[in-house]
Image (cartoon, rainbow, N blue to C red; front, side):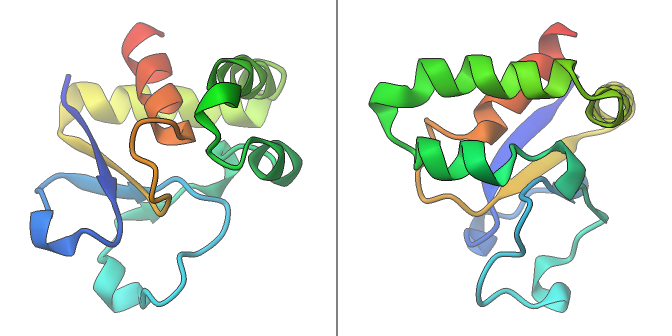
Length: 118
């Protein structure tokens, strides 16, 4: 299983694989051509209210992580998307793209962990 987390703005570090944007909102200043996505899976992103509450505050990360996992567990659509990601990751390199400046405390980190441990 190969899962790579990458900021969508870090194009000089682009890696090969199935590229999926996992943010609910399209990243500012990035055209669809520049993004070169295979898929935009905004349904798997945290809710707007959870994202705004968290605001990438490292002190809130543990609570954010639990809340985000609960959002996924309680939604059949998100469960389906998680299964789809897991299947992709077993067959090819999966590149999860996100826009956050914070690379250690964000939803992509949580999602990668869920995919690997599902």
